[in-house]
Amino acid sequence: MPSAHEVTELLQAWSGGDPHALDRLTPLVYNELHRSAQRYMARERPGHTLQATALIDEVYIRLVDGGRVTWQDRNHFFAVCARLMRRILTDFARSRHYKKRGAGARQITFDESLHIASEPAEELVVLDDALRGLAAVDKRKADVVELRFFGGLSVKEAAAVLHVSDETVKRDWRLAKLWLLREMSAEQGDGC
Image 1: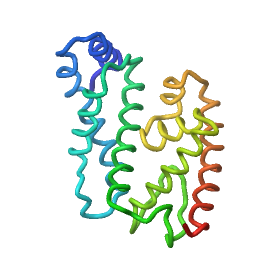
Image 2: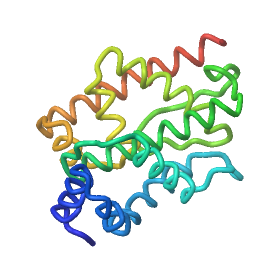
Image 3: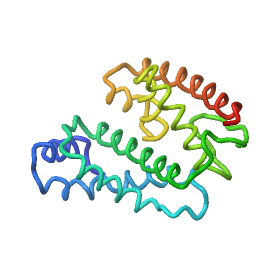
Image 4: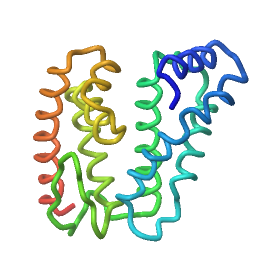
């Protein structure tokens, strides 16, 4: 297991233009990215055409094509990767013409272990819409959800990425879950 310092040094070298830093970084972070991608894919419908490895490949393509990023540290890198995975899967779900806003969908819940059953892509779109709404109201709370739920970061890691206290992350996490539950329930209840 590579040290956080080693990963941070490689990220900073990559930010600084070292073309070989990404090649040295990839094997150090691949297993953790793959676990994160598997968590995402476990929520998707069986037989999904996108697999965890392909999801990671798409993340790398977007990281390389996205231009230079000034990486703060390991946690910042995994937070950005989590955000990219969410966007890729949400874009994929939207492109597959799933019902807009979950019309006719069943009641869902939102918690740390959100279990998505028969129509995960629809629910991902509903969650993404709600999360975008939360970001418009309170970006930090949306970032906490993204880091904790999608990125799998601990309270302490999320606090480090956001430069806030552990208690702030815990409070934002509780309030964000309540807000998202309300919004997701409203979206499902409007029948659009």
